Image (cartoon, rainbow, N blue to C red; front, side):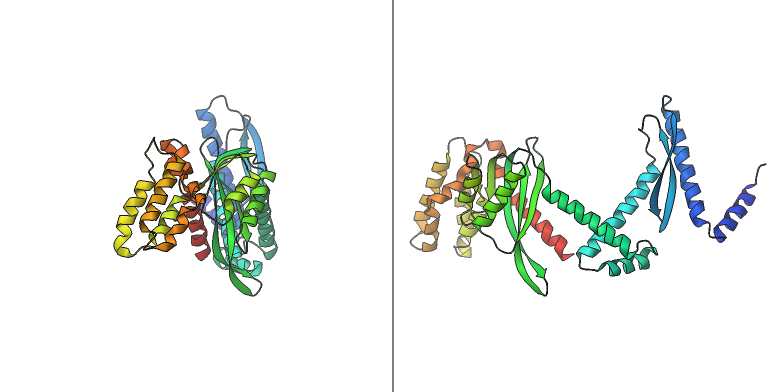
Length: 343
């Protein structure tokens, strides 16, 4: 028996009016996925159908039980299912974002009811948050690679609420460069203050989680940080951030001299040179300090032998010096934190 298009429309309209919207949605999506498998088999003649599997998904505020077609090779995945999964993932991200902004599970549930209808109960949202927190804890405890070419580390201070009070607290971050050249955020750890003992504690934590050796550490000239690195990774080299040093030195001088001082500092911290060694760079810095120490005595501290650590980059090939002479990668990461926290 063949139905006309008008008869089919009437049947579907009647079904929808009797609360069968979910059924129609299921039938439609299942039909699309089955048709997609047929197209896949036409394009791949060696592919054979292998029945169906059932899965639950949310779409248009409805819980659906979908009949997902399979192939023997397992290489077929309906694109329609990917779209539905993406929608569900976006909602999960929104739940986590609202919760992280301080909304209770009840408030998040209310927002979702207003926007999507009764999608998630308080219990479901609470479960999703536990799942998210579990994933965060797994990330915080994951094992690292045994060797990193470079590890950049820094701390950023942001306003943090504890009970009824708000104060600035430190968030320590570590970025590692793997042997294939890719970067990885190793850790983000909260400490109310900053200090050499805390840095040493976090470096020890990296070692416990599998980091056996690091070629080069890059950081700001934090108090006692070189000793902290040496105690945990005695064979690693350490580069202090040149960008911060230049900024600090320029701040000593009046505006009318800043351009001149910048040019002199650029001459001292050369990138393209095959001649200079770290001690040569440090001697040039000392000469610069001596030239201005009488009129600007606060600059004398830069004669300290510790400051040879700003010239470690000279031990490396010219091609990578701009990647390692500053802590800019951590600075960018810190800016991202602050931008997200302000949202």
